[in-house]
Length: 116
Length: 112
Image (tube, rainbow over all chains, first blue to last red):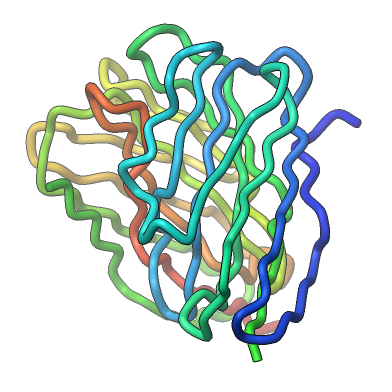
């Protein structure tokens, strides 16, 4: 597809379970970002991947959160032992990053996670 | 820390009126500023991107201005239509860490 694709679009899970969220960036985009949007809050940065460089994990809220990007393309965000405060929309974005420049970011439709 | 504020948080206008949405940011050392549209339950759609060296960008009925020195951007939507009803998000590209800092959005309702 032409855009950023995320799956699943909705996920309901029980507290304490692990979840995996998937992001397929736009083909050829070297930069990939995960953001979280909680009810009534702005988008919160989670993690940033750029090519083969070590990811910027400084936005991950706890060690229950992790992410990987395989082959410089698809990314998976994993939340272990989910808590109710993890309920949010998780948004993935990709861009053609050029060094320190922040070019136009393209977002996916998001995964709405509900922890019950 | 970069703070991005959008005022008003919500507004309703009759169809045909022009919309003016304001965004302010505290640190003028930005690479660019991007306006997005978000429909309920959906992701973000990029509307306009203004580089730090630019003063404005236009696309159809949309015009965005940037005054970096005063830390402000304004999104103008001319002759609003009911289909313009959505939340509009402002985001600044931060120097040095390759991320976007977002405001909480302007929720717009255009009344037919």
